Length: 348
Image (cartoon, rainbow, N blue to C red; front, side, top):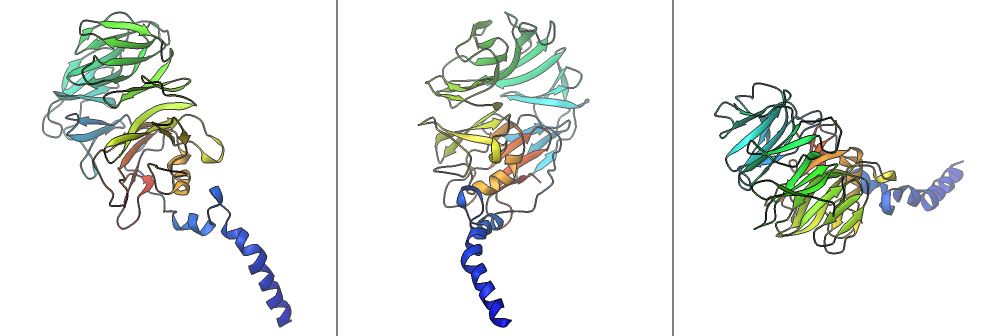
């Protein structure tokens, strides 16, 4: 009987154990996956947070809202005093932080956490974006859902022509800001009005960003750049640039639809080649372990992304902190937690 047990154990070790060890994505060992799995953390900022902004732009603290306005230094904390109404979006320019209330009006402060919020103005405002010293606000002035049912204002002054809903603003150094709309393409703000529409990037724009010299536009059909990059996929509109030390090398783009076993989350687009990849699966990446990404943020729709420039997790490679506002599962982050390796998890 003892000899039979030894024989069966030997058969298991020789033939079955190797298969168990190498079950996993991209043939990574199962124990490798387990080693890089972390207990889930409940996000402190819940629900579907807004886009993240920095005030003052380029040098200040980060802000986000999920109804409450939150401020980030080394952790996220509510801003007091609070705006007088529930807040659904925020924007920042050089002279102030702006909050869009559920009442369709805009509130502002030039010193969050120490000064009260004051009414800036607006009526039926549906989106706000900052560019330098200009606050762009988009108000519903026509029939909801129609291509020309909205009016964009610059620092409170209404512009013509009527447009679709404003979905993003970007700047190229030395040039006028460009505005992306849902339904009427792109416009350029010339100081006295809007030039356009421009349908180069399509009609339904859902996101736009810039690295200072190139514009990256997310539309209903994919991502394009002003220098010829073109990627087709089902993106959510979340878009951010990831830098390896100093130069942008990846576009991080949120996914609207699940892609098989790799889920939602975001994809990495290699700027130099135009290739698209799941984070952590090949070459230079915004994350170290692809399997940990897939089991964490890869399970959720990402509506907004922010890469914290200049931060370093202490790894051998440059590893910026990344924040992700999910559609309904709160604010997530990719960063170190204690003595653990950098990981995607709920931001606590």
